[in-house]
Image 1 (tube, rainbow, N blue to C red):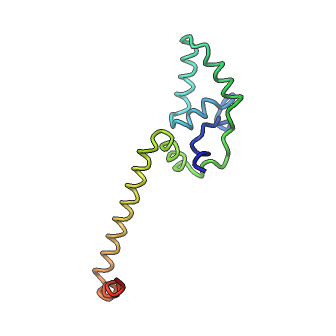
Image 2: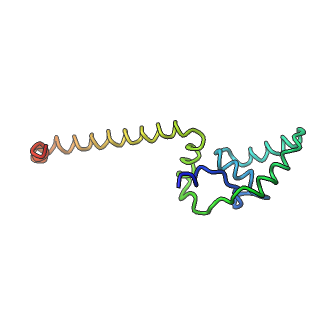
Image 3: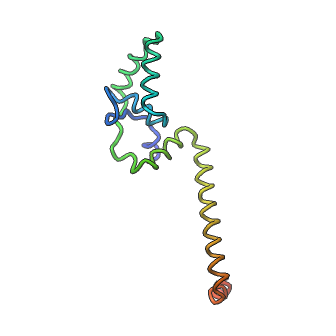
Length: 125
């Protein structure tokens, strides 16, 4: 499942010709306009292999599955994983620590305001 979300796909739904630039934009998280302008700019600056590379990637890269992301937030998450897996793992751990801290605060609030519940928890320990 993770391999499916971390692969490069050409994005025919958001693409113009083969969807290669849209696929690069989806893979990297960069706006597709900048990717297209970069491709055109490199071609005009004398990088003649760019159109050839575009055609080759367009012919051999797989199409992006329609079920790949459920929403925009999930898409941003997986783009972050592709860019920096270590940073993303660190962020997920930090989010879990924050959730754990907030749950502990809630538990403390309810236990301290309810002596009967506090006594019951102490008996369970």
